[in-house]
Length: 237
Image 1: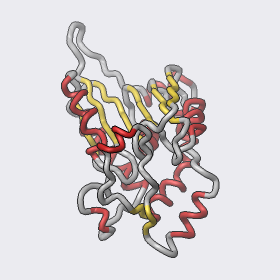
Image 2: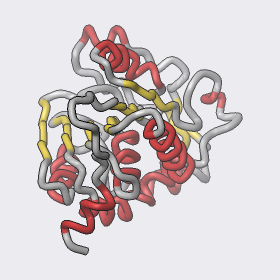
Image 3: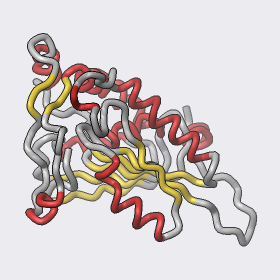
Image 4: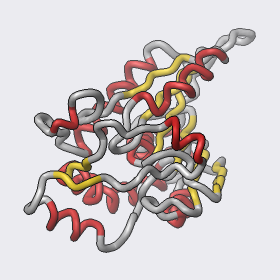
Protein backbone atom coordinates (compact mmCIF):
# COMPACT_ATOMS: atom_id res chain seq x y z
CA UNK A 1 0.00 0.00 0.00
CA UNK A 2 1.48 3.34 -1.00
CA UNK A 3 1.64 6.47 1.13
CA UNK A 4 -1.30 8.14 -0.60
CA UNK A 5 -3.72 5.27 -0.04
CA UNK A 6 -2.66 4.97 3.60
CA UNK A 7 -3.22 8.68 4.05
CA UNK A 8 -6.72 8.43 2.66
CA UNK A 9 -7.69 5.85 5.25
CA UNK A 10 -5.81 7.04 8.29
CA UNK A 11 -5.89 10.82 8.20
CA UNK A 12 -8.88 12.71 9.54
CA UNK A 13 -9.23 16.31 8.43
CA UNK A 14 -12.65 17.05 6.94
CA UNK A 15 -13.12 20.19 4.87
CA UNK A 16 -14.06 23.20 6.99
CA UNK A 17 -15.82 26.16 5.32
CA UNK A 18 -13.44 29.09 4.83
CA UNK A 19 -13.47 31.47 7.78
CA UNK A 20 -15.06 29.02 10.21
CA UNK A 21 -13.25 27.65 13.25
CA UNK A 22 -13.23 23.83 13.34
CA UNK A 23 -14.69 22.10 16.36
CA UNK A 24 -11.82 20.08 17.80
CA UNK A 25 -12.27 17.10 20.11
CA UNK A 26 -9.74 15.29 22.28
CA UNK A 27 -10.27 11.71 23.39
CA UNK A 28 -8.38 10.91 26.61
CA UNK A 29 -7.56 7.27 27.42
CA UNK A 30 -6.04 6.37 30.80
CA UNK A 31 -3.64 3.55 31.59
CA UNK A 32 -3.91 0.21 33.36
CA UNK A 33 -4.99 0.39 37.01
CA UNK A 34 -6.00 4.03 36.54
CA UNK A 35 -9.20 5.89 35.76
CA UNK A 36 -10.57 9.18 34.45
CA UNK A 37 -9.21 11.09 37.45
CA UNK A 38 -5.74 10.85 35.86
CA UNK A 39 -6.88 13.19 33.10
CA UNK A 40 -9.25 15.40 35.10
CA UNK A 41 -6.90 18.40 35.17
CA UNK A 42 -5.90 18.04 31.53
CA UNK A 43 -9.55 17.79 30.51
CA UNK A 44 -10.34 21.00 32.39
CA UNK A 45 -7.43 22.83 30.74
CA UNK A 46 -8.42 21.65 27.27
CA UNK A 47 -12.06 22.59 27.78
CA UNK A 48 -11.04 26.03 29.06
CA UNK A 49 -9.10 26.46 25.81
CA UNK A 50 -12.20 25.64 23.77
CA UNK A 51 -11.71 21.95 23.02
CA UNK A 52 -14.34 19.27 23.52
CA UNK A 53 -13.01 16.38 25.59
CA UNK A 54 -14.13 12.83 26.23
CA UNK A 55 -12.42 11.17 29.18
CA UNK A 56 -12.89 7.44 28.59
CA UNK A 57 -13.25 4.96 31.44
CA UNK A 58 -11.96 1.55 30.36
CA UNK A 59 -13.91 -1.58 31.37
CA UNK A 60 -12.61 -3.10 34.60
CA UNK A 61 -11.62 0.31 35.97
CA UNK A 62 -13.34 2.88 38.14
CA UNK A 63 -14.87 2.78 41.65
CA UNK A 64 -15.95 -0.67 42.76
CA UNK A 65 -14.48 -2.61 39.85
CA UNK A 66 -11.30 -3.67 41.62
CA UNK A 67 -13.19 -5.88 44.01
CA UNK A 68 -12.48 -8.30 41.10
CA UNK A 69 -16.14 -9.31 40.96
CA UNK A 70 -16.27 -8.11 37.36
CA UNK A 71 -12.79 -7.72 35.82
CA UNK A 72 -12.40 -6.72 32.20
CA UNK A 73 -11.88 -9.38 29.58
CA UNK A 74 -8.95 -7.32 28.34
CA UNK A 75 -7.65 -5.91 25.08
CA UNK A 76 -10.60 -6.50 22.74
CA UNK A 77 -13.08 -5.04 25.22
CA UNK A 78 -10.84 -2.03 25.90
CA UNK A 79 -10.26 -1.41 22.18
CA UNK A 80 -13.98 -1.60 21.45
CA UNK A 81 -14.68 0.96 24.17
CA UNK A 82 -12.11 3.42 22.80
CA UNK A 83 -13.30 2.95 19.23
CA UNK A 84 -16.94 3.55 20.21
CA UNK A 85 -15.97 6.69 22.16
CA UNK A 86 -14.02 7.98 19.16
CA UNK A 87 -16.93 7.44 16.80
CA UNK A 88 -19.28 9.23 19.19
CA UNK A 89 -16.89 12.19 19.56
CA UNK A 90 -16.59 12.47 15.79
CA UNK A 91 -20.32 13.08 15.65
CA UNK A 92 -19.78 16.23 17.74
CA UNK A 93 -16.46 17.47 16.32
CA UNK A 94 -14.83 18.29 12.99
CA UNK A 95 -11.47 16.89 14.06
CA UNK A 96 -10.52 14.51 16.85
CA UNK A 97 -7.15 13.88 18.49
CA UNK A 98 -6.29 10.83 20.61
CA UNK A 99 -4.29 11.15 23.84
CA UNK A 100 -3.31 8.04 25.78
CA UNK A 101 -0.94 6.98 28.53
CA UNK A 102 0.61 3.53 28.93
CA UNK A 103 -2.12 0.99 28.05
CA UNK A 104 -4.23 3.93 26.86
CA UNK A 105 -1.45 4.97 24.49
CA UNK A 106 -1.26 1.47 23.00
CA UNK A 107 -5.03 1.47 22.55
CA UNK A 108 -4.91 4.86 20.83
CA UNK A 109 -2.29 3.56 18.40
CA UNK A 110 -4.37 0.47 17.66
CA UNK A 111 -7.55 2.46 17.06
CA UNK A 112 -5.71 5.03 14.92
CA UNK A 113 -4.62 2.15 12.68
CA UNK A 114 -8.27 1.48 11.87
CA UNK A 115 -10.04 4.83 12.33
CA UNK A 116 -9.09 8.19 10.79
CA UNK A 117 -7.91 10.73 13.39
CA UNK A 118 -6.39 14.21 13.24
CA UNK A 119 -3.42 13.36 15.45
CA UNK A 120 -2.14 11.20 18.31
CA UNK A 121 -0.28 11.84 21.58
CA UNK A 122 1.04 8.72 23.30
CA UNK A 123 2.87 8.70 26.63
CA UNK A 124 4.90 5.69 27.76
CA UNK A 125 2.95 3.30 25.56
CA UNK A 126 4.11 -0.34 25.69
CA UNK A 127 5.29 -2.10 22.56
CA UNK A 128 7.56 -4.88 23.86
CA UNK A 129 7.86 -4.44 27.64
CA UNK A 130 10.18 -7.15 29.07
CA UNK A 131 10.79 -10.48 27.29
CA UNK A 132 10.00 -12.51 30.41
CA UNK A 133 6.75 -10.73 31.22
CA UNK A 134 4.30 -12.77 29.11
CA UNK A 135 5.62 -16.05 30.49
CA UNK A 136 5.44 -14.74 34.08
CA UNK A 137 1.90 -13.42 33.70
CA UNK A 138 0.69 -16.58 31.94
CA UNK A 139 2.09 -18.64 34.81
CA UNK A 140 0.83 -16.34 37.57
CA UNK A 141 -2.78 -16.43 36.33
CA UNK A 142 -2.95 -20.13 37.25
CA UNK A 143 -1.86 -19.32 40.80
CA UNK A 144 -3.72 -16.10 41.56
CA UNK A 145 -6.14 -13.92 39.57
CA UNK A 146 -4.33 -10.74 40.68
CA UNK A 147 -0.92 -9.72 41.95
CA UNK A 148 0.10 -6.63 43.97
CA UNK A 149 0.62 -3.59 41.77
CA UNK A 150 4.01 -1.96 41.40
CA UNK A 151 4.76 1.17 43.38
CA UNK A 152 3.53 4.55 42.11
CA UNK A 153 5.68 5.53 39.16
CA UNK A 154 5.68 9.24 40.05
CA UNK A 155 9.13 10.73 40.49
CA UNK A 156 8.11 14.22 41.61
CA UNK A 157 7.35 14.11 45.39
CA UNK A 158 4.63 16.77 45.20
CA UNK A 159 2.88 14.95 42.36
CA UNK A 160 3.23 11.65 44.22
CA UNK A 161 1.53 13.13 47.27
CA UNK A 162 -1.45 14.17 45.13
CA UNK A 163 -1.73 10.80 43.42
CA UNK A 164 -3.26 7.77 45.12
CA UNK A 165 -3.98 4.36 43.65
CA UNK A 166 -6.77 3.81 46.17
CA UNK A 167 -8.28 0.45 45.28
CA UNK A 168 -5.78 -0.11 42.45
CA UNK A 169 -3.39 -2.04 44.65
CA UNK A 170 -3.89 -5.24 42.67
CA UNK A 171 -3.36 -6.01 39.00
CA UNK A 172 -5.53 -8.66 37.27
CA UNK A 173 -3.57 -11.20 35.27
CA UNK A 174 -5.99 -12.18 32.48
CA UNK A 175 -6.47 -8.66 31.06
CA UNK A 176 -2.73 -7.98 31.26
CA UNK A 177 -2.03 -11.23 29.43
CA UNK A 178 -4.44 -10.22 26.67
CA UNK A 179 -2.56 -6.94 26.20
CA UNK A 180 0.82 -8.67 26.10
CA UNK A 181 -0.43 -11.13 23.50
CA UNK A 182 -1.69 -8.30 21.29
CA UNK A 183 1.51 -6.24 21.30
CA UNK A 184 3.18 -8.19 18.43
CA UNK A 185 0.16 -7.42 16.24
CA UNK A 186 0.22 -3.77 17.33
CA UNK A 187 3.78 -3.54 16.02
CA UNK A 188 2.55 -4.55 12.56
CA UNK A 189 -0.19 -1.89 12.67
CA UNK A 190 2.09 1.09 13.35
CA UNK A 191 3.31 1.61 9.75
CA UNK A 192 -0.32 2.09 8.62
CA UNK A 193 -0.73 5.11 10.92
CA UNK A 194 0.19 8.37 9.22
CA UNK A 195 -1.69 10.84 11.42
CA UNK A 196 0.77 13.31 13.04
CA UNK A 197 2.03 11.86 16.31
CA UNK A 198 3.77 13.04 19.48
CA UNK A 199 5.51 10.08 21.15
CA UNK A 200 6.59 10.66 24.75
CA UNK A 201 8.69 8.25 26.79
CA UNK A 202 10.51 8.35 30.12
CA UNK A 203 14.14 7.34 30.52
CA UNK A 204 13.61 5.99 34.06
CA UNK A 205 10.16 4.41 33.72
CA UNK A 206 10.38 1.08 35.56
CA UNK A 207 7.35 -0.38 33.76
CA UNK A 208 7.62 0.64 30.08
CA UNK A 209 11.21 0.82 28.78
CA UNK A 210 12.17 4.01 26.93
CA UNK A 211 13.16 1.85 23.96
CA UNK A 212 9.45 1.09 23.39
CA UNK A 213 8.78 4.77 22.75
CA UNK A 214 11.74 5.05 20.39
CA UNK A 215 10.55 1.99 18.49
CA UNK A 216 7.02 3.38 18.19
CA UNK A 217 8.50 6.54 16.73
CA UNK A 218 10.58 4.52 14.27
CA UNK A 219 7.73 2.30 13.09
CA UNK A 220 4.99 4.92 12.66
CA UNK A 221 4.13 5.63 9.04
CA UNK A 222 3.45 9.31 9.65
CA UNK A 223 5.88 11.81 8.11
CA UNK A 224 5.04 14.22 10.96
CA UNK A 225 6.23 12.65 14.21
CA UNK A 226 7.93 14.10 17.26
CA UNK A 227 9.71 12.02 19.91
CA UNK A 228 9.94 13.62 23.34
CA UNK A 229 12.09 11.90 25.99
CA UNK A 230 11.85 12.69 29.68
CA UNK A 231 14.25 11.86 32.50
CA UNK A 232 11.37 10.87 34.78
CA UNK A 233 8.13 8.93 34.36
CA UNK A 234 5.47 11.20 32.89
CA UNK A 235 2.69 9.91 35.08
CA UNK A 236 1.63 6.74 36.85
CA UNK A 237 1.40 3.38 35.10
